[in-house]
Image (cartoon, rainbow, N blue to C red; front, side, top):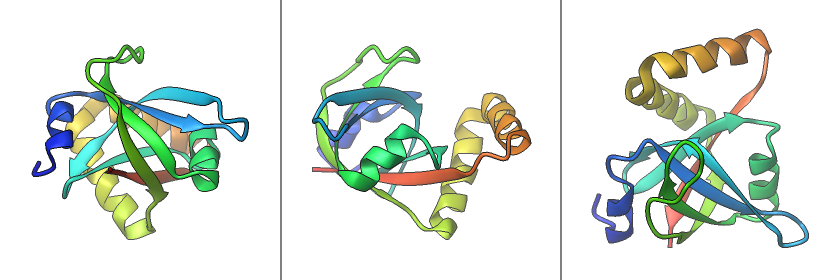
Length: 125
């Protein structure tokens, strides 16, 4: 982690991703993540509100948090963008490695519900 802002995320299981509605209202969501090449990556439902808001406005904020979204660090301004399928698959493999059995469970539920998944990259400012 060569970016000093990334050091606060090391060793954490969750980050809080704050995206913005059309009205400007902030929506914070705790999510699993991985760090790769000085960027953070998140996998979520392709039809989720996060993805819709990121497509409309890529400016976000992120902070380390617990599973309930309670902050464990400082907010950092960032930009988020949806990644291509090749990158998404590589990220998915790293998420499997980091989260193990809980990730396998959620993948099974996702497959059974035929939900599409999307991965977005977070670049800290």
